[in-house]
Amino acid sequence: TSDWGIGHTSNPFDLESNIALVAGMSSASWVAVEMALKRSGVREGDRVTFVGHSQGGVIAARLAESGRYTTTGLITVGAPLGGIPVHGDYPAVSISHTDDVVPPLGGRVEPTHAVGVSRHSGAAIGDLADAHSLERYVATAGELERSPAKSHLPDFRGGGGSARPSYFRATRTVDP
Image (tube, rainbow, N blue to C red):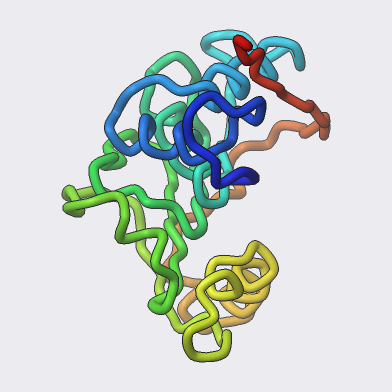
């Protein structure tokens, strides 16, 4: 979420999109990501590993479970996934911080085959923004990579494909 506004902001990654996604509806951010996939050349049936933080994690999980792509893996961090169970036959891991208020906003946690990893973020007590920050989650993922528990995590090496980074900027047209 890059804009905490609600009610037709020009940023599709706003609170309005968060609410819609958690409710299982379409959102401006969902549409923006689908357009970015299409513009980058990804077609239905293509092999894709989905990765996302926060609202991006919800979108990644819903795309992974959509059946439109051959999902090769899913990694979410700090995402409110409660009502979005992962049932596909692909490796999946969900990383959260015990002091991050965002993941529980997804509501009741449904049974899932995603491996959940949770720990304290290391942020100061009460610093909710830092506990949810991408930087803290990158540090957690780095520690997980070096952890003895790594052997119990899904194996993501089976993809064998290539990746090409792309950057897209999305805006929502707002009626005056």
